[in-house]
Amino acid sequence: MDISVVIPLYNEDESLKELYDWIVRVMEANRFSFEVVFVDDGSTDGSWNVITNLAKDDDRVKAIHFRRNHGKSAGLNVGFEAAEGDVVITMDADLQDSPDEIPELYSMIMKDGFDLVSGWKKKRHDPLSKTIPTKFYNWATRKISKIKLHDFNCGLKAYKNEVVKNVDVHGEMHRYIPFLAKNAGFVKIGEKVVHHQARKYGHTKFGLNRFINGPLDLLTLAFISKFSKRPMHFFGLYGTFMFIIGFLAAAYLGVDKLYSMSIG
Image 1 (cartoon, helix red, strand yellow):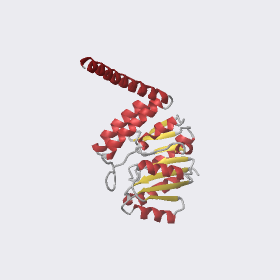
Image 2 (cartoon, rainbow, N blue to C red):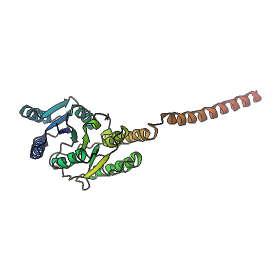
Image 3 (cartoon, helix red, strand yellow):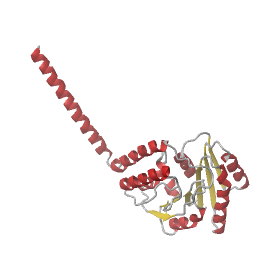
Image 4 (cartoon, rainbow, N blue to C red):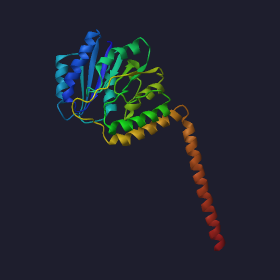
């Protein structure tokens, strides 16, 4: 199979049929063998009904369902496990990512030899509440990971199948998959400017919890980047710090005891 398209989603029932039709048009026009893997992350609208109906009518559709919301990383992880295509394409379900980008992304993996290609939404159609923290995370992730990408969090990406089978995505780490891939030995990472469309239906699912979880995962990224090859250096630094604290505490107690004895 040429391509697996993995689409994690939450409450996107209005866009799913339109997205599916668009993907099928692109795939059939380019004569790709393909599958579409929808992962419903505990939607409370009609998303699951739409997906199951698509799967009934087209055996190229895989439908995966979580009973409750686990987050985008969990959705991607399960989708990666199910993906059978030589190239795995990820995209969001809100129609802001264009399936028309798929043929060139596929070519960059299969012909140009990239392990991973990340989309770059050079011209974004998102609210400031999303673009401002995204710019910060992109800047910080570039500094920490030493990977020269402009848009780590772009949902539209392409991977060799072996890449997605060798990364474990959890928490909010889907933003940092290029770094996880690099850490797993997949170092040929490319970037492609992609068309980003304004949201057609509903509203963004960007929540305040990402302001909390994002920095925590960024700290995890920094730790992995600095100490993954030399973990004892971390414990050496920690041990030295604790030794100094312990020595100062013991010295204080010793002096205090001698002072008390001299008074007595």
